[in-house]
Length: 55
Image (cartoon, rainbow, N blue to C red; front, side, top):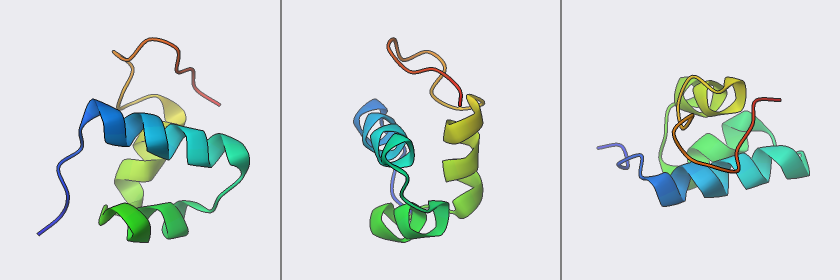
């Protein structure tokens, strides 16, 4: 079962993306589908969280 995508998880994923970590590595770490990580990266998910901006 995949991890629940909480605001805290979205923030951590976003920070890892900004550091240059690979999407597939982030997905594996959090038990997410790589598509969810991509959605965070493009702003399709997590847009409600202040302080995050699309790449």
